[in-house]
Image (tube, rainbow, N blue to C red; front, top):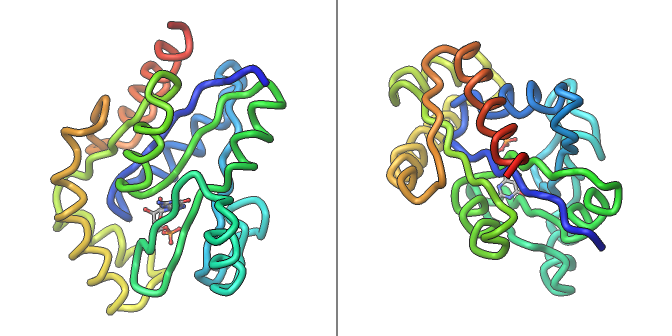
Length: 190
Ligand code: 5GP
């Protein structure tokens, strides 16, 4: 199978990486397809099984671990498991496309280590922890407890930024989208 490229976007929850990834997916010239992760959390309103995530049970997730089906997986938050299935990359490369990932920092760095040549690992940096809090509260998809859990993790995640190939500062979403597009375009051309 001809290998395509891998574009990893990682960031603390609420940094805007999902919006940036969606924007890139809408650019036909980049020829991207989204790596649909497996996840054990329940679907949020509007999320579609098989499109946003493969929503599976913890039992199914453990079976995938046992069968070595994942390129990487993480217990991103307590009792919430997320993982990239090998079949996702294979499926997308077989279609002749490049893979784009919206995954946590540990997973992103693992993909980079496994596919160093093919991967561009991008860290999306929020303006500040305070701004993250505001964004997560505005989104109001999580309980207060879960928001605090995500904030606590964000400080640890921010410290990993220098390990990425490049950092995009998401202080202004439109500017970040343009920057992300230019970066990906350049990487795909090399
Ligand atoms: P959310 O619950 O907000 O959709 O995602 C929580 C975090 O898990 C986000 O940082 C998201 O990028 C990350 N995530 C999603 N899929 C994967 C995956 O397959 N592997 C890893 N390591 N993290 C993932």
